[in-house]
Image (tube, rainbow, N blue to C red; front, side):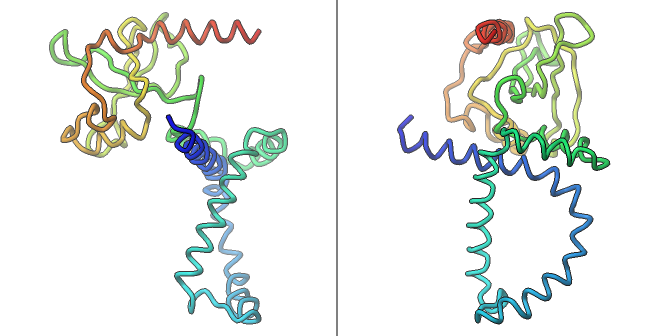
Length: 228
C-alpha cells in the first residue's frame, strides 16, 4: 500500500472512530435537542444577520461549512476517544439511563474496531452438503457456554436486520481476513448478485487457504503473552 493510501486510510479510520464515539451519546441526548429550537431561531435571525450571512440565503455554502467542521470534529474525536479524558467523560455519560444499551448496539456496526472487539467475517459449514459453507459474522470472539464453541451470526438477505445465531466448534470456523462488516453488508444487500469475491476484488480460493479460527486464537494468545 502506498504512503498516500496509508495516510488516507488512517484519516478515514480516525473519522470513523470519532463518529462511533459520539453517536451513542448523540442518540440518547437527541430527546433534549428541542430545547435548542429557540436558540437556533435566535442565531438565524440575529447573530448571522449581524455579519451579513444567513444559512437560508447561502445554503450551499452553509452545508459545505457544516460538513467541513463536522469532519474535523470527528477526526479530532477519533484521536481523543482513547484518552483518559474521553474515558472519564464516558463514565459520566454512562450514568444516563439507556446509554450503555444504545452504545452496545451501535458498536456492533463499527467497522473500524480492531483486535478483540473487531467483527470477523467467517465461513462455517452450511446447510447443504458437507462441502457447502455459509458466510457469517462473529461480533465477539468469546467462548460459548459450550466448550470450544463460538457464536456465529448469519444475517438475512436482503434486509439484514434479522437472522440466526449458531454455536460453532472452533475447528469449523474459517476467517475471511480481508473482509469487513461493510463488505458482508454489501454481500447481503446484493442477494448474491455480487459474490463476496467480487466485492473484495479478489480471486476465489480453497477453504484451506482461509485462516482457521484456531490459528487466530493461538495468535491472539501469543500476542497477549508477549505483552505480559
